[in-house]
Image: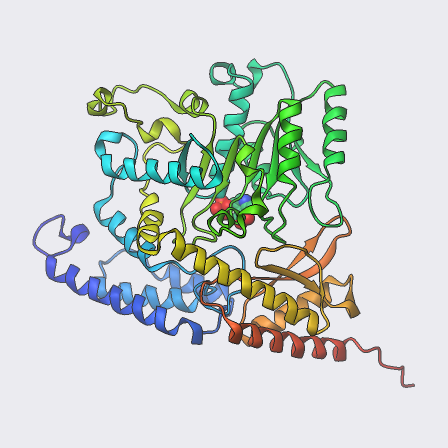
Amino acid sequence: LGEPFDSLLLPAAVRGALWRTLQEIAESYSESVDSLSVAPVLDPARLRGFVRSFSFAKPLDPDQVFREIASRLIENQVHTASSGYFGLFNPASSTMSIFADALTAALNPQLAAWSHSPLAAEIEQHLVTSMGAKFGYAECDGTLATGGSEANQTALLTALVRRWPEVIESGLRGIGHDPVLYVSAEGHDSFRKVARLCGLGDRSVRRVNIGADLRMDLSHLLHLSREDRAAGREPFLVVGTAGTTAAGIIDPLQELAALTEGENLWFHVDAAWGGAAVLVPELRKLLVGIERADSITFDPHKWLSVAMGAGMFLTRDTTTMGRIFSLRASYMPKEGDVFPVIDPFTHSIQWSRRFSGLKLFLTLAVAGWDGYATVLRRQVEMGRALRAGLLEDGWRVENDTALPVVCFSDPAHASDMPAHQSIVNQVLAEGRSWISTVVLGSTKQPAIRACITNVKTGEENLRVLRNSLRIARSEQSQSTLVLPNVT
Ligand SMILES: Cc1ncc(COP(=O)(O)O)c(C=O)c1O
């Protein structure tokens, strides 16, 4: 290594070799992932031993260390890229999103000041407007975010400031009220986290009961908000979920829109996963009412299969985000001031921000809206086929949704979580499918959850999963047979 910076930038020949290695690894992973065991063997002591062997005392060969870490990563992760992954909302990355992320890292556009990366800023603005239009917003404001949690935090802040503008100057102590927000018992727990981050705390998050269909019970919502008002608290925000994490349930959005309009409450829809349904013409009706929401969380890194780190916050309100996030700072570039443009840092929790929009933009440019609709439609069909197959196999399906996530239980062990967990453990140990357990609704029903997360998941994957479940269930029944006492 000749120059002092060579240890960071590396000479051209070394970089060339690394790109080839990356290509070889990424391609071979993509071709072979379906044949790998979907879940790794967990052994923290072994992993820590390996990681701590890196003392950073001596420089290592770039190609060697890169290969070593890539192969250990492949050995030690759940393969969300596998068509046997019926998992959480973590997709296989679309190819264009992988290239977009590599390009983003190479060019490192800075999404704070518009003038530093004007094209990147305009691309993200275009995505905000285009996705907003898909949800039914004629005009909207918004931002790319790291994911659903940041988007939900942006929603909470926007709702809070819209209601109490003085929060900007004086914080919560300036408002002299006890603000409360409402989210269903099946809504995402990020709302508790963001309530803590915004200084509201857990007590400000009221969990609304759900009905037997796992949707928010509107009469309980009304009851809670009246009770809170009577106790001197101030309801300000209602969160509807379009595609709950556990069971893919869509809250009654139309009714929530009407209720929140009547009560002067901010209506946010957490459509982090299920929002993708607006891209499929025949599924659009499932989300009717979302166009009346004041704001929406939508995560391209979930059902739109872009690589991790791409959330979105959208709002019909075109002034409040600017009020919350706009600051003047003498060190910020001013070249953009003469144009009618938005500096991204004035509309986002983050200041310097990664160009996370590129992976959605390039995937969309190549697939088009129709390409997405075709893929999503097929996933919905696979979800339907899985649901029908599980019913045929004698499982009880616990969730009623058109979205491709199926929650099911074994009628022989209806309320027995350890029995369901043991079935799941056995399926995981077999390594061909990944599923998980959840607890649903007010009855705390244990269930097994299988979501069509991967775009490649097809009939053969369903057959393998059903077969593994059948075997695991029959072995579970054998092991729980009560044997007579032999004396
Ligand atoms: C409905 C919903 N909202 C929000 C989130 C949080 O998103 P993220 O993990 O991207 O922060 C999730 C995550 O699964 C989710 O399912």
